[in-house]
Image (cartoon, rainbow, N blue to C red; front, side, top):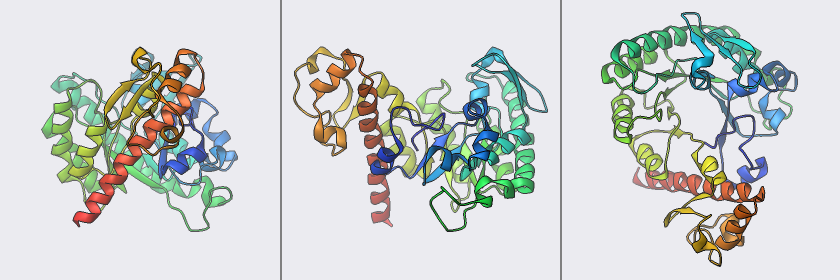
Length: 341
């Protein structure tokens, strides 16, 4: 799932995302809450209509962004008080408020409010963090069930792009740090709450890749196979293929577009730093095995020139290629799994 933090996948317009085959993209609750504001988005018919995206949307709970603020946040039983990275203003997110914001935004899939456990974290810290996450999961679910009828497109389907009834789904998030028993405990309790789907969070926070795989392998068998299973914030191309074959249904990561803005391309021949001088007169496409719009039209030499010249088009073309590469991996994995069935 391409990440559209502020209602935009950076440097890539929505029609291009559609042509690349993106089925669902992400919005970020924390950023959209601060700007333009969830009530403004609600008044404009929800995030689908506001950003002119007719396919599925997912919003995170804001928990990870609040977690990343470090010194600007204070966690309590009730929720998290934090200061805006934009202007320093004080705000408070409780589980109920996170769900309220996400209902106003109107994404198809929303996430329970959780606390992301940092790495490394000792046992006591991981247990405390898990206690918050479990209490907040129940409060998130209760508030969602009481207020889900308030989603903007329940009042008007205009601009969403479908006359069929839509439903908003709430996923629980498995936390527990890097402790297997805490992860198991969290997964089992969330499954008993009967969420619409389940995510594995608190990964890609600095732990070794081997530990990431251990946590995913520990949790996946505990989550219902007939509901979506989502690993948040991963990963490199080889990782997403491996996790998909393990049984992960959904993944997201800023890496394809963030790397693109730093001139790093993912290709069938490995990673290319397109800034390198060796590409200055290279007339071959970025990836000879790729059929994306960028590889069909442009050369490595031209992409390098755009980067060297500081042209904004560089970020757009590099991002389109990287997203096409990632989405292509998932298309091949789906086709392979279907053929095996």
